[in-house]
Length: 345
Image 1 (spheres, rainbow, N blue to C red):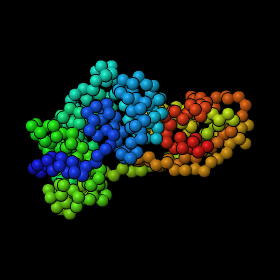
Image 2 (cartoon, one colour):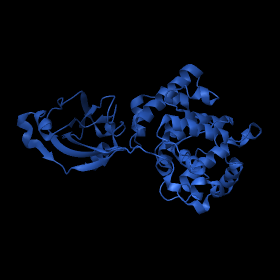
Image 3 (cartoon, rainbow, N blue to C red):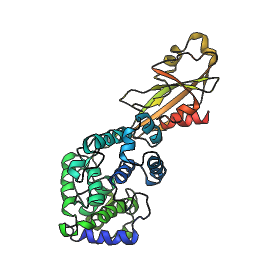
Image 4 (cartoon, rainbow, N blue to C red):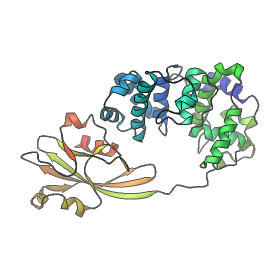
């Protein structure tokens, strides 16, 4: 086990770590929790604007809990992984209803809230309450797996539990619990800026002398991942019904699958299925737009927009939806490619 790792990390963070991020230095569990959820699988540069807008509209957990879910999804639109926004809303409601609007003060209690995993719970507890709780997000897994030359497949639960035990052993001692916020930030910073996935900058790493992966000359061999995710492809035809007054027809997506619970254009598995949903007399009003690809984490979507120009009365189109004026749909939770399509006109 690496001795004194935490001291070197704390010193390094003070000299070289990231400074000035809007959630850094905060002891407010709401702000820390919000930033941790937003930063899951999302770059800091992307999160900054969303974090500011969320705080402006939802300055505390009570305001967030009382807001309509559609408004929360609307502000989240474009950030991706929309289950995070739904869990964020559920968690806020739970904090208000079960804890009087005050976040619990331990990682164990925080982890019982909806949508808060053990690593997020540990981060909030460490940053806000100086609890000796180990985080294990993607960046930290990589740092620790390399320092320890950890042989286990981090995609398995057994290996994650073992790595978590190592992470707990490396924490500052009880007498130094006040260093937990800076130590936790240092691990995050090291993984984000030095111990990179593909091109680690080992020459700048404060742990290089003790890093077993570096000593072996194989830092990028860790963390070990034996299972490779396979990508799939899917083609969807989008019925873009536009009324002469500028409104569009949108439906709410099912609660499972892609774009779960968001508003979107009606989607079909084929051009034939789309045209079958449109009255035959309206065929001449259909105009195909260029298809484009939208990349999800494990799937490539090939999207084929078909515009239906509707005049006269605004009648129901297809699916369980309704007509939305531009001022309305802009505030909805929309999948990123649908929003870009509508905004481009």
